[in-house]
Image 1 (cartoon, rainbow, N blue to C red):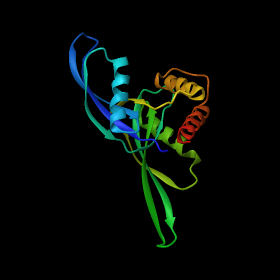
Image 2: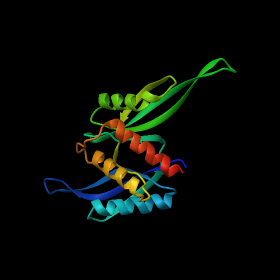
Image 3: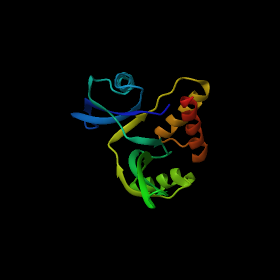
Image 4: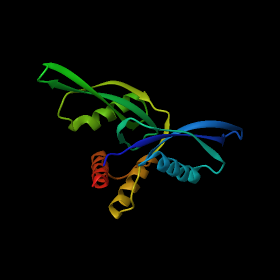
Length: 184
């Protein structure tokens, strides 16, 4: 089973540090099976963070192939990765584009994190573009298994940008295990 990500736009009145209230539109990403579930999930998640009334103004499917959180980072970047493949029948090189969402503090770090994610790729690839995403936060789906609860804690620690005592490789492996267990 593949993961479907939905971009959910939320509009609400936010009180800034100086006490002034301002209407803001923020974009969040949720993993869901349908638009209805995405609406339900984002409502549930936002209720925990926003005490004011909010409105879901838009929900659409996102075109991300993979989502990769990294520790000690605070922004999300959209990386376009072009995979190169040689077509033996036509004798031409073909490109297939995919989009990866990575967490980083700046564009250079986003490039480094994308390169780190792609390190196990056997074929040739290039990274033609990286841009900062307006996505504020990502809410993956978890079914509640004990193994997944441990992975949730690791993911949440990454989201909170708190240092944790595991390497990026261990976190990546845990997220891969989680995805594989969800696909079964």
